Image 1 (cartoon, helix red, strand yellow):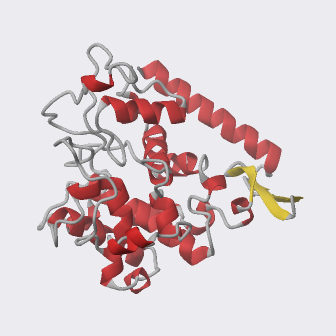
Image 2 (tube, rainbow, N blue to C red; image 1 turned 120 degrees about the vertical axis):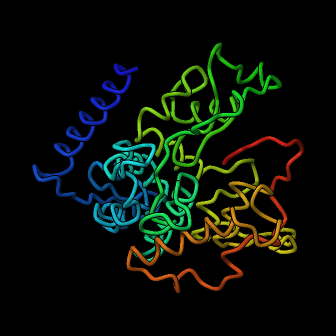
Length: 322
């Protein structure tokens, strides 16, 4: 497995160096290349936004979200009592994000919207990987990215009903791993197909490579769970237009609805519960730390999903995420 990690690191490094050589100078300065396709301006920006796209004409994530901000958000992740010391870092996040910036992740709208989406996404990540508690040093919101995996799995999360599509590999365990923890064989299979990594046979890759773990989380953020449903990204940046039924279900282009599409009725439609409030608190805390200010989050009704009807109500008691 060490060979796999070294290979991934080498590939990423070689790709980064090659892209810098091709699209920037020796110091990594980005050049913006512009052309018009079907009447629309599209751009490339160095290694970070290297697919022709309208979104690559905007600032990139590294322009609006720097190392010191990442360190502020996740200040306790490498504390001795944390459970993923040395695993998560800014470089891994930026390398992962670069695969999705041309699709609009962190590059939609102006600088304010870009920073708000980063804060929203990382707010989910922080809440789902936190080991903070009420009297923890630095406060309970300073401990995001404390985990890279579920510490004491209660089962192997193998659903045999998917044996013809995503069969469980002998000995594999599909417990929660990653920045937005992945559970169950069918979820590992779907993410692996999208990222072109054999996660069905090697789910452990997620807990061994931080860039891959962030890629899986960002893919989940920008990918609809089902056809004709929005992604969390499209909800948050306003690309999605709610239907009359969505309005009746109290779903809109809000942070609260991102929780709905990601976690359904495990978090939403259950009133003012702690799991929901924890995610909201991380988002607001990160807005403050990034210099945006929580007032930019808008009214409380847009932050909560307490009274929303789930996009995908649960049929059986399966744990989709922690």
